[in-house]
Image 1: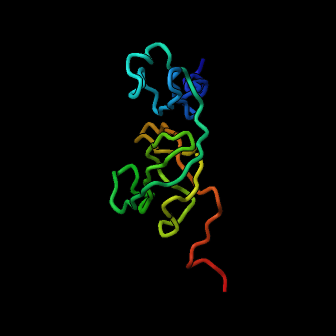
Image 2: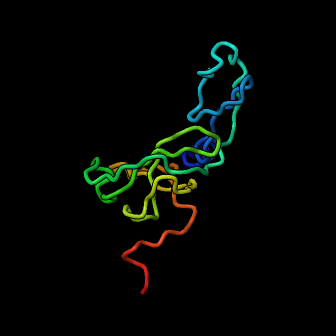
Length: 143
């Protein structure tokens, strides 16, 4: 099996896979071994759960100075997303101008390139978020 195929066939590599507590039903992403609400009652009861990938922006920040690997993306938007399942995760907002991001804006996951590794050229992919409703920037609206 090739290295690319090995990574491609890992279910949690290309999906948002979390866990659901079999005791209270709370969902976690990334996965945990024990529910923070039920504690010991959840041991052995945490089961895999595919996250819907839809949610809304809770808060966000526009990054103007970032790590070297992300210099080509500046400015970019990082946000805390509350997923429909109730869990909150951090993700980048794409396909949207920084001035168009709003609190409570509906978003959904997309699979995108995260960065490319130096001279080896290995490309790392992962989830990002994009607006669910098409956004028109004030500066781009037609008169």
